[in-house]
Length: 283
Image 1 (cartoon, helix red, strand yellow):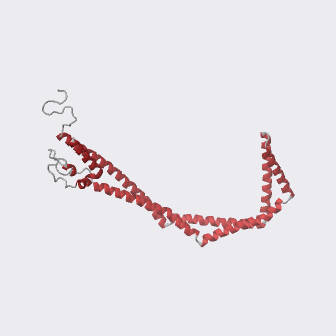
Image 2: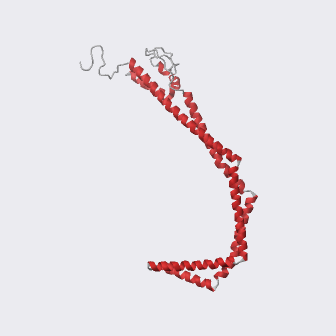
Image 3: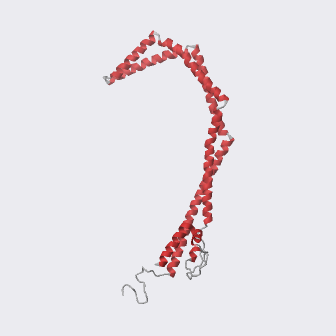
């Protein structure tokens, strides 16, 4: 019973703390007590005291596991750092671009040209909407709108009225467009606005191209790709090392258990345990 409790405690501490930490925890140099049957647990490289004369090597290299953890963490941090650089650099370039005099001038010209176009349209539109023909079509359009809103119509009547309303609306838009196309001031303002918009679009496309061709941005993207590959390699190496460590620990403690069972074949719970007077059970 006492041996079983000691063995359970030893195995639990060795598994959680590792062999090196366990040696420090017991406060005794490994293998210094020749009468201690469990000294080989603390120093697996020393000969076993179970009488077989064998020696056990450490089940795994703790330093290798720690190094693999450190490499995986460093690789992950490298991915985060380069990913941040790839995302932040275009934002910084965009701020520089939008604060440039050329971009500000293009934006100002686009805004002014739009306002000028709207101002040029207003007198022309007013003349069209005040004409008798336009007002007559608009009244017909509004009358049909009220009828449709009132409801109580058959499906065929609703379709017919909706078709008439659409035709009246098309006539109104055609009259407005004709007036705008025939007015020189509106056409001049429209041309100015389109040119200003094309200038803004060209600057924006040029900026996008400059970002893609920026040496610093291209270098950051390459570094991010390399960091991702290295992070994946470090992670899978760590996973493989942990799996190999677990296999080594299972085999190591399985051997210890087998040695213990070989040198202490009887258990206090074994029904056939004898005291020299025959079996305790079944006498």
